[in-house]
Amino acid sequence: MITAYCLSYGNWTVIPKQWEESFSDMLECGFDAVALSFSESELVYARRAFEMQVNLAQKIGLEVYVVPSRFGGRFAGAPMMPSPWLTKNPDCQLPGVPRLACVESQKFREWAQSFIERIVIDYDIDGLIWDEAKLPHYISKHPDTIKRFGPEPTPEQMQDSFIEFVDELLKAAKSIRPDLVMTMFNMPGTPEYFTSNVIKLPDIDYAGYDGTFSHQSYFHEQAEILKPCLNDIWNRTEFECKAAGKKSFALVENMLMPEGVTEDYEERLDKYLSTTRPDHISFYYYGHNNECPEEVHQATVRQMKKHLL
Image 1: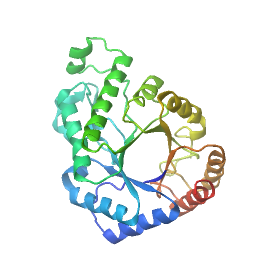
Image 2 (image 1 turned 90 degrees about the vertical axis):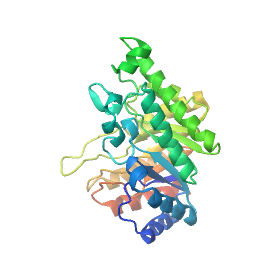
Image 3 (image 1 turned 120 degrees about the vertical axis):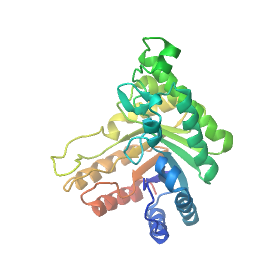
Image 4 (image 1 turned 180 degrees about the vertical axis):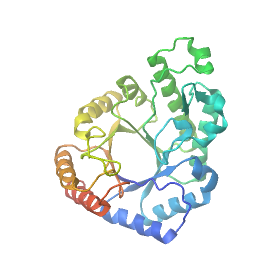
């Protein structure tokens, strides 16, 4: 499976013919599916627009995967902003890290479950992609955490609690749509205790990591290595997936790329795809904040067509 990561959140300006053109181009490039971000903004302001987006993608012939984004601050996705629900419910914020919700809070868990259920009920989608659990090992001092684990919770207890939280969300979605495909990936820096155990959940189908093949920069500063290379974490991916009986996933972060790095990116991607074949691979479709977006896109498509199609 080849998925176009296309986190066009917000949907404030809705031009259906442009969506249709983009989805048609994805199919022509060789993508099987598109991953669309669904944040709290969509939940409030763009449910009709998001439905239109899902329907157009499927009309073109793409499967649709939704990335539940930034809810409670506990997953990644777009937009990169605090959770509106959490700012209105400060009693669920982690002490010292107010952008994160406490997963031991039953109030937050119930709301998070309703958020996921709304996606699955309202839209005829093919699956969910769970993008980078955020700080699952962080030791919470929230009253609900202390009540459950005592005054000195351990990192392992925090991670076990987060895994329990993920399990509840997966089960809530699957209880409505048993056929949904579930993909979960983590950051390479996430503790192995969490990454190796969370993917053992029975409702996870694909698991892996995101990573780069180039130097990156946010604006005009010197380009540098901002994230690990996917080559460096493939052995970990294979080991964890084999142990858990799951299929493998990789997200190529072809984004934040300044001028002058595309050739190196393509050479390294070519080498990776020559030896490595994730069961599910995703590339950013016109990855955000690239200085030469067309150049990067064409390099990506060349390597997709060379190795994957």
